[in-house]
Length: 176
Ligand code: PRP
Image (cartoon, rainbow, N blue to C red; front, side):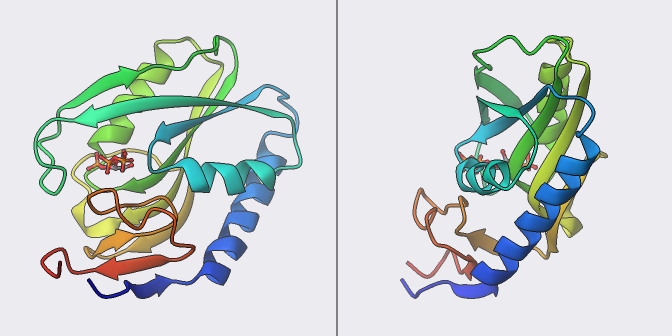
């Protein structure tokens, strides 16, 4: 398999993550109870960099979901595999996702988070596949809009490969 072609460079990602962290730090400066909820597995690197660039107090939780069917052709049905461990009632929840494609997963996650009775729920997403959104879901902090390429790196995988690439690259899933 060829090395993925660079779509978003490491420098561009780091610059954008720093910008998002500054905006989040400013927006939550008066609340003091921010909980960042990373969606396994793909968000782990974005969550790590974003959280370390904040200048405000924050805690970290994780949640895991699974899509029914083939991930390259999502059916829209999402199942909760692991909920947050801590009590997030009354807190300000920021869901952290690597990618929004159809939007079904993020919409489902917002509902799950709201069921815990937090003070607020917002979303931070590194990349959005703008052309394929099938669900109207609000992204409060967005890194990049991309096309319909299959992307890997910075947490994103193809068949569990290439998650730890420092950049976001494009692969051809048929080139194996
Ligand atoms: C990806 C991503 C989102 C979901 C987005 O997860 O992290 O959770 O797909 O797709 P949607 O907008 O069409 O619902 P994936 O199933 O690849 O799992 P992973 O994070 O473990 O790689």
